Image (cartoon, rainbow, N blue to C red; front, top):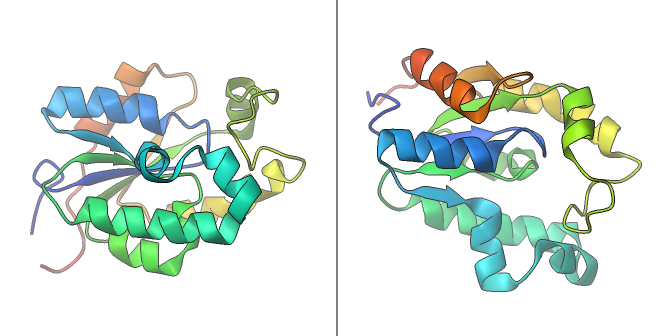
Length: 172
């Protein structure tokens, strides 16, 4: 069985949880490459808000699943997933091959971190709070480790991730 320091570590959580910032810090600390799944999609297909506007969420999720599969077919890395990556059951299966860390964040922290005037958050709308609540069990059910991020600096979150690594419960 691999340990978290040997395989890919995937960071999950709602938008504003800090997956990109923490992921870059964790990668630096562990000497691993860092990949932000949203940036991979944008590099190939253009800005995410435009994808949502022009092609819709379903088309975006298909591109996301394709990008995730490609990223998991390679050397170990630190991977920041999108806030909705886990809503696709096939992505849950794909990510089960990684060490999954849920960066758990409170709604008040999300609200404080997300600037509602920024157009780069296509799902930051009137239903964002309901989406946040609906996704909490999904994140929990697909986590090998849960780290609370509220009130912590990115470096403190990385410290907690490393200090609290848990053995994987999946068979080899």
